[in-house]
Image (cartoon, rainbow, N blue to C red; front, side, top):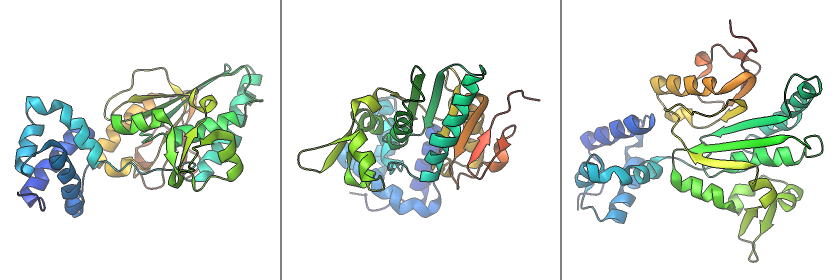
Length: 279
């Protein structure tokens, strides 16, 4: 079997396929990683070599396999409260401002939050936990968090809400006890129903527009680093279009999009705000 490692030509074919379908650009230095991840799909589908698998992917019959392929290629590692300072801002500054706006009659008692490229749901549930920790101040509010990802597999994990220890290692014990139910063997933790009910998950590719009402805050972190510049511009355009006037965009430190965020106003290295009135 010809399954040791992709040739340069094969890698270029798969790289271009990945780019066309997801916007992710895979650098040539990742040829070994890509080879290993494709090999898992060869084994799962009984394909004899890389070439036969590629030909299947681009055929009509391969339509259902494309998602499994992209999921295998994507990096989906995450954990709760990753970059905790972003959640501290959300819990204290952002929610405080939104509550103050409502008290002044400048905003309804509703919040819409989008966790874009949410992977297995840790970010979306971290945001939901922040809302729960403000439940007294947010009583009578309509709260909604949308978590999206290109991979149906990780979204199924998110919807189950069951996590291993590594996902919650950085979460203080009291927060874990309030928001998770531990399994009898102590090997997994399930997010409580009161947290799950705030969050909806759906499949979405950032290269496509999202046709839903706008959001007060959007988190997009640790994903655009896998896109090339042209794809980042497309994704950022779609994200900004979904941001409400006065809404906030939270980005990761290495996304490479800081010169693409016009007309947003930069507030910090990770935080941008959409003006109330665009000029």
